[in-house]
Image (cartoon, rainbow, N blue to C red; front, side):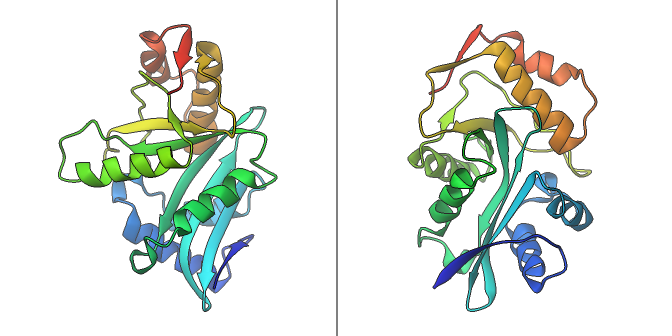
Amino acid sequence: MVRLEQLLSSSPSEFEGVLRIYTEAHPASERKSADALAHMIARPEYLFLAAIEADAVVGFAIATAFADSDAALLEYMAVDASHRGRGLGRQMFRAVAEHALMAERFLLVEVDSDRTDSADAKDHARRMQFYRRLGCRQIKGLAYVMPKVSTAEPPLMDMLVYRPELPASIEKPHLQAWLESCYAQVYDQALPDERIATMLAGLPNLVPIQ
Protein backbone atom coordinates (compact mmCIF):
# COMPACT_ATOMS: atom_id res chain seq x y z
CA MET A 1 0.00 0.00 0.00
CA VAL A 2 1.24 3.49 -0.89
CA ARG A 3 1.08 6.22 1.73
CA LEU A 4 1.64 9.93 1.19
CA GLU A 5 3.90 11.62 3.72
CA GLN A 6 4.77 15.31 4.03
CA LEU A 7 8.50 15.81 4.41
CA LEU A 8 9.56 18.59 6.77
CA SER A 9 13.32 18.11 6.68
CA SER A 10 16.03 17.09 4.24
CA SER A 11 17.59 14.75 6.78
CA PRO A 12 15.28 11.69 6.55
CA SER A 13 16.20 8.90 4.15
CA GLU A 14 13.00 9.70 2.23
CA PHE A 15 14.63 12.88 0.94
CA GLU A 16 17.32 10.79 -0.75
CA GLY A 17 14.58 8.81 -2.46
CA VAL A 18 12.99 12.04 -3.68
CA LEU A 19 16.33 13.20 -5.08
CA ARG A 20 16.80 9.92 -6.96
CA ILE A 21 13.45 10.13 -8.75
CA TYR A 22 13.85 13.89 -9.24
CA THR A 23 17.15 13.36 -11.04
CA GLU A 24 15.86 10.47 -13.14
CA ALA A 25 12.59 12.11 -14.16
CA HIS A 26 13.57 15.71 -14.90
CA PRO A 27 16.16 16.92 -17.44
CA ALA A 28 19.08 18.99 -16.17
CA SER A 29 17.59 22.11 -17.76
CA GLU A 30 14.61 21.92 -15.36
CA ARG A 31 16.36 20.76 -12.19
CA LYS A 32 17.41 22.85 -9.24
CA SER A 33 20.37 21.65 -7.20
CA ALA A 34 20.04 19.25 -4.29
CA ASP A 35 21.13 22.07 -1.96
CA ALA A 36 18.36 24.29 -3.33
CA LEU A 37 15.76 21.57 -2.64
CA ALA A 38 17.14 21.08 0.87
CA HIS A 39 16.66 24.78 1.61
CA MET A 40 13.18 24.79 0.05
CA ILE A 41 11.91 21.90 2.16
CA ALA A 42 12.39 23.89 5.38
CA ARG A 43 10.42 26.91 4.16
CA PRO A 44 6.80 27.09 5.39
CA GLU A 45 5.39 28.06 2.00
CA TYR A 46 6.61 24.79 0.47
CA LEU A 47 4.83 21.43 0.44
CA PHE A 48 6.96 18.32 -0.14
CA LEU A 49 4.95 15.11 -0.48
CA ALA A 50 6.59 11.71 -0.81
CA ALA A 51 4.71 8.61 -1.93
CA ILE A 52 6.12 5.67 0.04
CA GLU A 53 5.60 1.95 -0.48
CA ALA A 54 7.37 -0.68 1.61
CA ASP A 55 9.65 2.03 3.05
CA ALA A 56 10.81 3.14 -0.42
CA VAL A 57 9.97 6.44 -2.10
CA VAL A 58 8.07 5.75 -5.33
CA GLY A 59 6.95 9.28 -6.18
CA PHE A 60 6.99 12.87 -4.99
CA ALA A 61 5.39 16.27 -5.50
CA ILE A 62 6.73 19.73 -4.63
CA ALA A 63 4.52 22.83 -4.56
CA THR A 64 4.85 26.36 -3.24
CA ALA A 65 2.18 28.82 -2.13
CA PHE A 66 2.96 32.38 -3.23
CA ALA A 67 3.01 35.08 -0.55
CA ASP A 68 0.36 37.78 -0.87
CA SER A 69 -1.28 35.91 -3.75
CA ASP A 70 -4.22 33.64 -4.54
CA ALA A 71 -1.97 31.29 -6.53
CA ALA A 72 0.50 28.47 -5.96
CA LEU A 73 2.86 26.54 -8.22
CA LEU A 74 3.22 22.79 -8.62
CA GLU A 75 6.96 22.90 -9.19
CA TYR A 76 7.76 19.24 -9.66
CA MET A 77 5.96 15.92 -9.63
CA ALA A 78 7.21 12.51 -10.73
CA VAL A 79 6.61 8.81 -10.21
CA ASP A 80 9.27 6.12 -10.26
CA ALA A 81 9.27 4.40 -13.65
CA SER A 82 8.40 1.02 -12.11
CA HIS A 83 5.24 2.45 -10.49
CA ARG A 84 3.72 4.39 -13.37
CA GLY A 85 0.28 3.56 -14.70
CA ARG A 86 -1.20 2.85 -11.26
CA GLY A 87 -2.87 6.21 -10.66
CA LEU A 88 -0.21 7.43 -8.26
CA GLY A 89 0.35 10.69 -10.13
CA ARG A 90 -3.35 11.46 -9.96
CA GLN A 91 -3.38 10.64 -6.24
CA MET A 92 -0.46 12.97 -5.52
CA PHE A 93 -1.92 15.79 -7.59
CA ARG A 94 -5.21 15.60 -5.69
CA ALA A 95 -3.35 15.54 -2.37
CA VAL A 96 -1.46 18.70 -3.31
CA ALA A 97 -4.55 20.52 -4.61
CA GLU A 98 -6.57 19.63 -1.50
CA HIS A 99 -3.84 20.38 1.05
CA ALA A 100 -4.72 23.21 3.44
CA LEU A 101 -1.84 25.31 2.10
CA MET A 102 -3.09 25.07 -1.49
CA ALA A 103 -6.82 24.37 -1.40
CA GLU A 104 -8.10 27.95 -1.74
CA ARG A 105 -5.60 28.91 -4.43
CA PHE A 106 -5.25 28.64 -8.17
CA LEU A 107 -2.66 25.91 -8.73
CA LEU A 108 -0.32 26.74 -11.61
CA VAL A 109 1.51 23.97 -13.46
CA GLU A 110 4.55 24.39 -15.70
CA VAL A 111 4.52 21.64 -18.30
CA ASP A 112 6.73 20.87 -21.29
CA SER A 113 4.97 22.24 -24.33
CA ASP A 114 3.46 19.87 -26.88
CA ARG A 115 4.01 22.60 -29.52
CA THR A 116 7.41 21.23 -30.42
CA ASP A 117 8.77 18.70 -32.90
CA SER A 118 11.43 17.43 -30.52
CA ALA A 119 12.12 13.73 -29.99
CA ASP A 120 10.17 13.98 -26.72
CA ALA A 121 7.03 15.42 -28.33
CA LYS A 122 4.94 12.32 -27.61
CA ASP A 123 5.95 12.38 -23.95
CA HIS A 124 5.11 16.08 -23.76
CA ALA A 125 1.67 15.48 -25.29
CA ARG A 126 1.08 12.62 -22.83
CA ARG A 127 1.90 14.85 -19.86
CA MET A 128 -0.35 17.60 -21.17
CA GLN A 129 -3.25 15.17 -21.50
CA PHE A 130 -2.55 13.80 -18.00
CA TYR A 131 -3.02 17.23 -16.45
CA ARG A 132 -6.03 18.02 -18.62
CA ARG A 133 -7.76 14.84 -17.44
CA LEU A 134 -7.23 16.08 -13.88
CA GLY A 135 -9.09 19.30 -14.69
CA CYS A 136 -6.17 21.60 -15.51
CA ARG A 137 -6.71 24.12 -18.28
CA GLN A 138 -4.27 26.12 -20.38
CA ILE A 139 -3.74 29.87 -20.16
CA LYS A 140 -4.34 30.43 -23.85
CA GLY A 141 -1.88 32.46 -25.84
CA LEU A 142 0.68 32.63 -23.04
CA ALA A 143 4.09 31.69 -24.46
CA TYR A 144 5.50 30.93 -21.04
CA VAL A 145 9.23 31.46 -20.48
CA MET A 146 10.69 29.48 -17.61
CA PRO A 147 13.76 31.13 -16.04
CA LYS A 148 16.99 29.15 -16.07
CA VAL A 149 17.67 26.97 -13.04
CA SER A 150 20.95 25.52 -14.34
CA THR A 151 23.52 26.24 -17.04
CA ALA A 152 21.26 24.60 -19.64
CA GLU A 153 18.49 26.47 -21.40
CA PRO A 154 15.01 25.41 -20.24
CA PRO A 155 12.71 23.80 -22.81
CA LEU A 156 9.66 25.37 -24.40
CA MET A 157 6.95 25.38 -21.71
CA ASP A 158 3.24 26.01 -21.32
CA MET A 159 1.40 27.05 -18.18
CA LEU A 160 -1.74 25.31 -16.98
CA VAL A 161 -3.98 26.24 -14.08
CA TYR A 162 -6.21 24.17 -11.80
CA ARG A 163 -9.02 24.95 -9.43
CA PRO A 164 -12.17 22.90 -8.80
CA GLU A 165 -14.18 25.69 -10.40
CA LEU A 166 -12.20 27.66 -12.95
CA PRO A 167 -13.35 30.91 -14.55
CA ALA A 168 -13.48 31.13 -18.33
CA SER A 169 -10.83 33.85 -18.33
CA ILE A 170 -8.40 35.78 -16.14
CA GLU A 171 -7.75 39.52 -16.24
CA LYS A 172 -4.31 40.33 -17.61
CA PRO A 173 -3.16 42.26 -14.49
CA HIS A 174 -4.15 39.23 -12.40
CA LEU A 175 -2.09 36.96 -14.65
CA GLN A 176 0.80 39.41 -14.45
CA ALA A 177 0.72 39.19 -10.66
CA TRP A 178 0.89 35.38 -10.87
CA LEU A 179 3.87 35.50 -13.21
CA GLU A 180 5.68 38.06 -11.07
CA SER A 181 5.14 35.95 -7.95
CA CYS A 182 6.45 32.91 -9.78
CA TYR A 183 9.53 34.69 -11.11
CA ALA A 184 10.40 36.41 -7.84
CA GLN A 185 9.50 33.76 -5.27
CA VAL A 186 10.37 30.54 -7.11
CA TYR A 187 13.22 31.63 -9.36
CA ASP A 188 14.63 34.63 -7.43
CA GLN A 189 14.33 36.93 -10.45
CA ALA A 190 14.40 40.70 -9.99
CA LEU A 191 11.26 42.63 -10.93
CA PRO A 192 10.19 44.14 -13.22
CA ASP A 193 11.27 41.54 -15.76
CA GLU A 194 11.13 42.17 -19.49
CA ARG A 195 10.32 38.52 -20.16
CA ILE A 196 7.01 38.93 -18.34
CA ALA A 197 6.22 42.08 -20.29
CA THR A 198 6.93 40.19 -23.53
CA MET A 199 4.71 37.28 -22.49
CA LEU A 200 1.81 39.63 -21.78
CA ALA A 201 2.26 42.00 -24.70
CA GLY A 202 -0.02 40.31 -27.23
CA LEU A 203 -2.64 38.97 -24.83
CA PRO A 204 -6.17 40.41 -24.55
CA ASN A 205 -7.35 42.10 -21.36
CA LEU A 206 -9.34 38.95 -20.57
CA VAL A 207 -7.05 35.97 -21.13
CA PRO A 208 -8.98 32.74 -21.85
CA ILE A 209 -8.54 29.67 -19.68
CA GLN A 210 -9.41 26.64 -21.81
